[in-house]
Every structure is written in structure tokens, then in C-alpha cells.
Length: 152
Image (cartoon, rainbow, N blue to C red; front, side, top):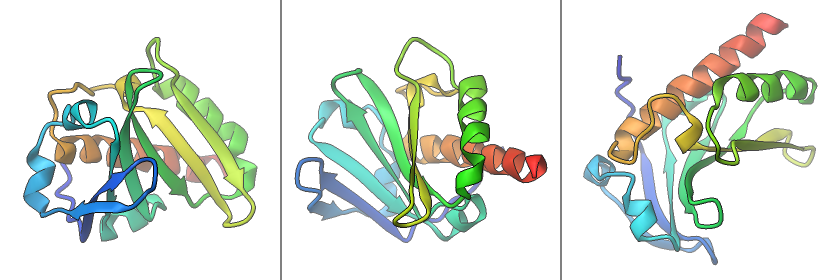
């Protein structure tokens, strides 16, 4: 069941400077995520109104050359008290040998800074398109937020 995400901002950015290299059309997201491995100096930044439902403003993806893994990065709007539950959820739902994830609460903006290895996510392969990977991330974070709401 693929969610038809609509993106109102798609940018290719330089990892070192965070400068926008180029704004992209939605068709760019039909490209394989292996693009990131071929362009390790770039990250992809997207915004979607649909992200409000998962308490995320935007999601960036990049290839981590140190761990040789694809990574998703985003700010998650959940209270600080959910730290242990988020940690537990990630431990239970991300698998593999790669460095799986990191979460850090930022008191400055009240967000959890989250990054996790896409390679550790069930269903991920490098043959998937960006659009398919954003769909996987969306469903993963949706279930995470749902689990946090049920835990309250």
C-alpha cells in the first residue's frame, strides 16, 4: 500500500556547505536511491504537507561514506519524555550490521534529531526509487508515532 506523497520542495544540496545545488522536479524522485552513492557529496532534501501527519517538517537523505549506508535525517516533533520509547522502537524495528540510528533531543527547537540507516529498514534495497524510499520512511515514522501515542 503505497502512499501517494506530494512534495512541494525537492532539492539536491551540497553536504559540506548545505547550499542548494539545484531544485528538482517531482520526476527526479523516480530515480534510484543509488544516485546518492554515485554523488556522495550531495544530499536530497524534501518537504511534503503529508509529513505533518507524522510530525516531521522535512526529510533529508544522504549516503554515509564512513558506514557505507544510506541515511534518513529529520526532526521529529515528539516530547522529550518519549526518548526511551523512541530508542526501544528503533532497536526493535531496525535490523542489520550497519550503525542503525541516532536520536538526540534538541531543547532549542523541541525536536528529536533523528537519523537512521535506511539499509536497516525492512523492505529497503538500493534499487528502490527515492519516491519508494520516502514512502517506506513515511510508513516507518507513522508507525513509530502511532506507537508513541498508544504508549501515553
